[in-house]
Image (tube, rainbow, N blue to C red; front, side):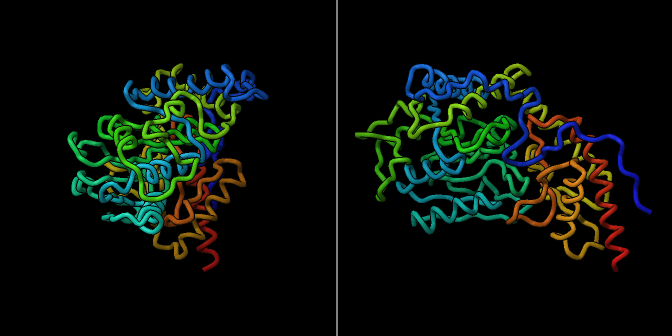
Length: 384
């Protein structure tokens, strides 16, 4: 007998892992002060871009001597810029436990052809970061958006190291504690935890990374869009608002709103608390049911933003088809949108729990997930 549909629906069914849900107080009117039709190099444009940089520093607690730049092509552009500009001086430790990390491995090994030690773990697991050689450069993803697995802390990264640490933190920034003294290059994009608009990336450089840039020239030619130095010196303008290419001032305004919202609710601590509370609601749901589980095998490495789930019912013979059917049911009811697992990841669901998502919406969605699962199991049993 089919379960009755739950009575309560989420006020916002958007649980996409990118672009992510807007802050709860967002409206189109929030963008009314955008400097549209003006040059981004005019004083008003530069002021907006500088405000985005310095408010990012304030909210994330980034040290004053670290450089923060707005760069093109989202987090991907920021990571590529870092790798093409900084790598090659010494061997590299390439770390991957999900699809984006694997993509960085391909770029370094096959495109840049740098001597690399590749460390990989399957979906649901993580590489032992303590076993890396930190006298080499290290490239890794802090939070696996497609696997729901994250680095539990930066404790194993030595404070004294000869190599640089290059960290893709796009689904960790604003939701997890990032140890800035252990990270030489950090990247993220606006459309993840802050729910901003896409196409803009953030590149954060420690003094050690700046020193490398000013004292090392890669063996390969650098496209203009990747160049961070001129005449052997850092292009300071990139880190004060003079962007390499034309930014969307509408997107800048949107990001400024998100940063203002973050400050209004209590800053980074509040953002982390919201993400933790959202994720915990799903973890508790899974713990009370024997047909669904977290993809992360070790609870210490579970992501609090991109929560990836797998179905564990032995009656399910085609996991991909089943997960797709469950997600389709929830979308058809306008209960949960865009929650299918990433295309390269194991079959299952991926529910975004970052700070812009309301816990009440997670709690309203979960009984519907129960309903959709049982409806699909009933259909599966009837067809057998």
